[in-house]
Amino acid sequence: MSFTLPTVLNFLKFSNPLGEFNILNEDIINYLFSDILLNIQFTSYTTPIYHCFESFFMYLNKRYELIKPDGHNFKVLSLDLIGIESLWELYLNSIDPKVNQKAQDFLLKLATKLADKNQRTYFIDVSMKHIEKAYASIKEKGHGSKSEDSIQRISLCLDFIVKLLEE
Image 1 (spheres, rainbow, N blue to C red):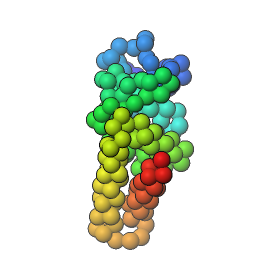
Image 2 (cartoon, rainbow, N blue to C red):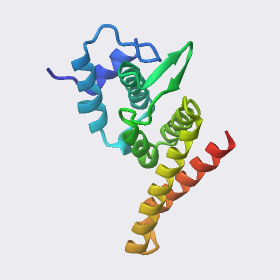
Image 3 (cartoon, helix red, strand yellow):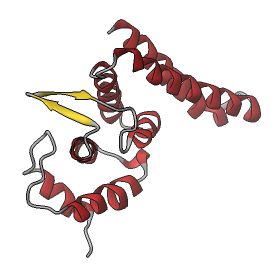
Image 4 (tube, one colour):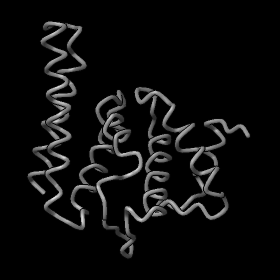
């Protein structure tokens, strides 16, 4: 079975934004998410590809009862979300400002929809780990053009923390 990105994008134009893929079986859905979307370099993501990612993310996490639908909204029941690490990497590595903003908004939404509000610290902890890793990279490479990506990652993480605390 072979799926190309245009095939995935055309399919998702007709999908429900909450991620209901009634015409595909679980193996195909897992394949599309794991083997296609997660193998695209995050620096290459465009807005349509991001929407595919988010739709599959929501579908899979609802399917495995990690996210519970709540009317037109949802609750996050577990922090072991399928694809959460990829969402972070997408947020921190996207070069498209629209994709970057959408990923940040989605991370913030996930954090604010936690069933257990005390778990919000998870998102701050993840941000701090990314800051520490980026800072170590700056120390290793030195200042200058080689460290611009690390500085950008630190900036994004700090921005995320501030916005989360404002929620």
